Image (cartoon, rainbow, N blue to C red; front, top):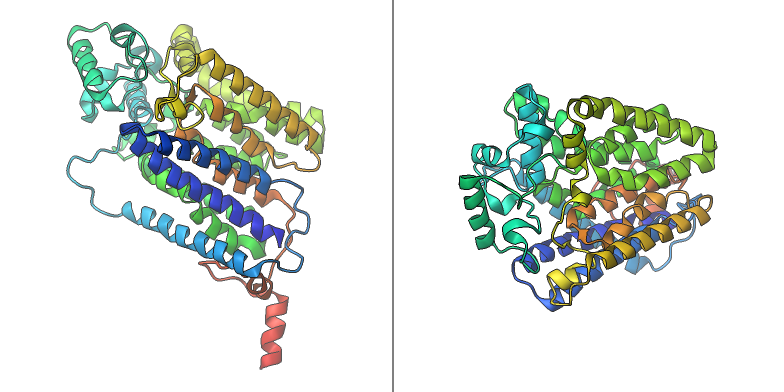
Length: 461
């Protein structure tokens, strides 16, 4: 019953990420050494578990006698409990929000929405967006910015305090000359172009991100073997980080949905188009490209991989070309913001031991070297196992980010969703209700009756 073990393992990894994310938020406000270690360890182990869950081809993993039924049932009971937690998070969307609540949970959501507004007004957001005008219109302030290690923050050792952020914000808002805050769109063009209809209608773009998550989950369940779908759906919900941090406010689903499509249907033209869209929304998708191309090349040949890559590149060029032609420098400065500007160390990966746990902060070059080494190691592992474990790449693509100078929690909370996209492609085989019961598996959803269950009912009658 390795299929059920794989599903449960990914869900448990997502549950670990859920609690790590909550603890990460608490410790960011009140640094604590043991807590920081717990966060880093939980995220690292979740990545390892997700990789292990995708090891092998999965051929026929639904067959076989159950082992350790009691332990298996206990794990699935935990998965079901976490699935209820996810459903509770989804229910919060329907509740009235408290006074003072804002949908602009971070600068990615806020700046992208303002960029869409600039585009509606006939202006190039990369060249004209003003963060102070944007934030005044949205009613938010410096606590939802990305500060830079220069200007008034040049001598700040780790990260500016709220008072320092507010003071610099007041000075630059009054006197101009902003160099302390990221103030332009930091992502490729589709990150805000896709928002234009919602901004034009005055709709909360967070509903678009939530709809993208639900669509991605539905596609994963649909792609999975029929007999395993109730368990995959329960597992997706049990991986509570996926739902909780989407509802909590994240624009990442706009790149995640097409990336899920691109991975699950990578041999088709749809997959290439979807990868182009994903890469045109956020740079995180770029990390998945070599693994995506490798998986295509292994199964269909390297000409097919090159062809799919050219289609994806054409989508990227077509969607970004108008902005490149309008102001090449502004577009380049925007898209390269995450790597070209002097940002503070921040994240939930290895660097969190220093920013939240009191360990010495190493030079940024050391973290870059670790990230590059991890990337090369993941590529080597994916290459060596490209035939025996063809789905590993979708998780391995995000492992190097754990070692970066910037390893934000938002880089990791969707890893279980991507892992399920890989699992859904595996030839796991079917599973009927009686086999699932024998294995001790539990699901929140009804299972279709398989041949064995049907025959059993007929004999009982």
